[in-house]
Length: 505
Image 1 (tube, rainbow, N blue to C red):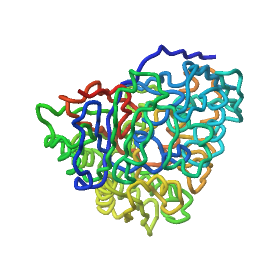
Image 2 (tube, rainbow, N blue to C red):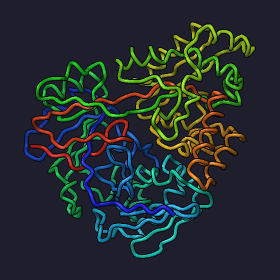
Image 3 (cartoon, rainbow, N blue to C red):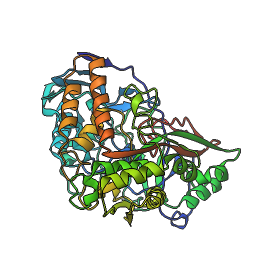
Image 4 (tube, rainbow, N blue to C red):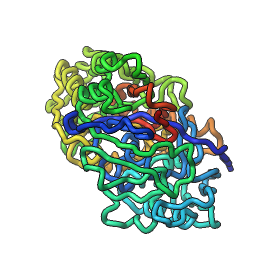
């Protein structure tokens, strides 16, 4: 048994994203003490954690909701509502902070946590993924809960830092308006009357939240600004106090009173989901997929589109990470001539397949499209609406996707993308050898044995070219350093961490 007990601490973290037009903002009204205005890249999909994709969209959810566990600036798991956890191959025990309440007065106790976990397990959305190996929930005391496992789940604690671990007032779990009227236990509540869907979302203090180190603002407004130039202009003019900034706008916003900082963003991949060739017959051919990966100039894309704020990387886990596989470092280095040879060897004549894209993904898609065209491969691009990409990735509308991901454990890769019933395996393609490697990892009793099995799982994935690894990007956050204090970027939030602990003066 591995017991993890956390010291009480405030997670002072922030960073953000974007969407809409500067004209939609109007006057900021953010000069009053205790008021913070932020800008984000995409609109919130839903405040219902069973359908929200999490990761970047947590910037909207985190003010309202607590999670069972959280991550710090180094990516370590720290306490949330759970003050400690014990993980064994057969269960995960959670000990909860006592005396907590939701904003509507319902108690945040073991019964409430169990109701949330059962609700999340029964859902079909992204929040259910971490519970793939769970078989049930038990209330073991007033403030203790046990998640029963039918197989080991080493990544479950990480999953509980995202939408899987979000806590909703039990009476609102099945409310038809949960997507627009969130009821949580976080430091703030959504002010629906002051908010305008798709434009801005206003939060005010939750009177039942007792941690003054995290509840530091009198008013928080998150504005949706999809246009890169609009976000840069808003931060320069003072209409917003903090925002994620496009890489091309970094020099534009830099000034004496604006701080610009970077933090780890997403890992990008071209993921082939239609491996059986149902829609795109070419993708059934392993050698063809290898040709695609070899034809992509990842270093040039990282430099030209991300202005150097990205590093070409052939695998999800970078050097220094415990799950990095050294032998995969250059498995598909850019080599157009070799790509042409592989294409000829594949015997594929219809080389066409299509990917969905929008915004920054479209720029990456167009660059990849050009690389592939140079070697005789036809990749089409269909532009989709912002905020719909995650849904498209989970449907069978496209045979491949270009997707930025933020996953910190191989089990997440398996559960989401490789398992036959994984949410990012919409064509339900089986991978028997990969399944076997994963089972060896999940059932390993020693860390070295587990790491070796996960390395084998990743090697099989790379050898079969189930996806082309592209690069790791960096996100850029700018804020008015004369006004905004205690900003700390956090690992695991690709479009910005939370506003807990951020202060204004």
